[in-house]
Length: 267
Image 1 (cartoon, rainbow, N blue to C red):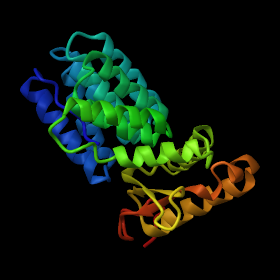
Image 2: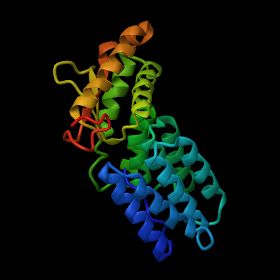
Image 3: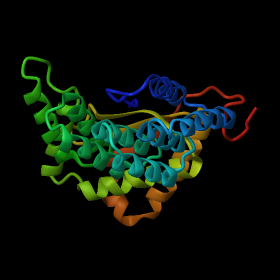
């Protein structure tokens, strides 16, 4: 889940995107760093406006500011340049602010411009799974395999098919799953905690039960508090308790050790 360099980006734009990739993957960014990056991005507007707005949108994602993400990427998409790369980076930024449906829509925009790109197809599989769109994930996995016939199948294609099989058995509905995933995303947005990675897996003792584990940049203690909040909402929602019920669960796993990085301020 990393930003992509435009094919003809100038040197300063490349350096800025590379630094944004680094600070985003670090999981912790102080306001001084963000201010410095924003100043550099605004200097690009006169020479490479598309790259500048892409970077400003990515900085908005680090601030968990979905409004700013959308504003800057919509401008970037109207400017001359590599629009497919803008769509890809828009998808990454939206994923960082936990706009799951928007992130999926953005990678679809890249595929409209470059339908056979294996990298984009792989991203579409991941974004579709992330958004609870399992049938679409399976279709994109098939397209990925067709685009790379002599390579290994898409690594998430089997998971996507297992989820489609569960839908066929009426284990749960995509609508029910999306409701749960959106509630989890709201918890993250409320706590301003960004993901490091997401893993969806089938439980070994039940072929139609799945777990979604979201590794997030916070302490285990804070992640446990987020899990309690998510569980309270789940228990209070009768529809959610039935669909997906216990057949698909979501949990947060803290990636940081307690200390100054703890967003709750614990020593």
